[in-house]
Image 1 (cartoon, rainbow, N blue to C red):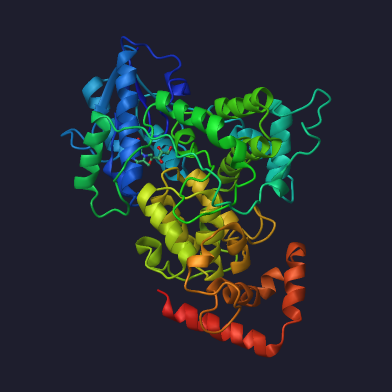
Image 2 (cartoon, helix red, strand yellow; image 1 turned 60 degrees about the horizontal axis):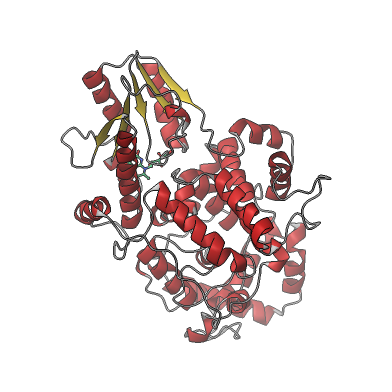
Length: 508
Ligand code: DLZ
């Protein structure tokens, strides 16, 4: 029996279900660098280089295990540009008895493979992706019948089910499930931030960088100083250095931002988790082990574990539970186009220009830059979910639709009307000022609420509340904000509207 086993660019795990029963003599692993995948949204150059290089390294390691690999690189004459034509060619070339793969991680591709499975005359086995803590079925069973799908309750179930940070009497370690309130320290610019572990590009990576430079020159982003891990061995090194050097301060400074500090105390492991170089189970287990053995603070360890065991699993579950409807939701009817400065960083808003510049340079910005700067600005100014989702999916090295869409539509834009978040996450300039040192070098005055040079986040915040009052004022978590608004004078409200209109008409 000869099986062609398709491995996608985000399935680079030797334990992936499509390879568990591989026959090294007869079977062929098929991998391909495809134009359609690199351009269906115009991914950041560094993201393409990262994925292609990791794919090439994975193929090499498969060969070293003695497995047959048919690797179609981008310039290969046999490259058909898309998965289905590539599989068709493999069928003609290898005459297999069977096809096998693990289901794709995003709806668009999963549907295409399902259709192909029906059309092709060959047996085509599509296996479940077992790399997550929670299966799609488990999430569906948890979600069915609930009126609210809050991450917190799902997370507690995951903690119990997988016995993570739990006491023997089934209570959470430390007595509380969640230490988020201890994770909001303002940044300390004098405190040492360990520089991230950087992996020197080898010949494979250097070749890929050249390829991406030539073939994707019109894509957003820089290829300079590429230092991401592209093998499991190096990804483990990055994980180790996070646990050793940064996890200690991760919790307290989780929301903190400093000028020219892209990495802070974050883990930068999402990109490896999302293509299979690291497994969520080992990442959680390493962090938990460090808590017990290195006596690391619980707010850091719990905060990190919540991201991986809670949030990551939750957004994936929600994505598959709600797709395809989720992609077209737009509760607040936001229609504004994405301003050019999301690509160029040419704006006087220091927080936005910093976040976009770092995104351009690294295909990375950390969670709070994404949510409370770039996301917050987008929501306050009414950018359409379609355009904002496109941007987030393009620019971030860790972005795949299953993780990007719920974060952007649900968390950032409240486009699902409250399925994911209990309220829209909006803030004025004061929050940005508290959590960063951006405002002190910005031309806008964060202390000024309206008028010339006032921080636009300040008046846009109240303008947002006024614009969406009909849909938001009865939200119990927005009550205090609307009570404050109701006490504002008409003159103040008119000034806010005037400043906002003026701002919105001058930004593109
Ligand atoms: C994101 C991406 C890119 C840029 N390129 C490829 C590719 O050339 N070949 C491939 O197999 N996968 C690629 N991917 C990942 C896919 O677009 C897609 O997001 C995942 O396979 C979904 O499971």
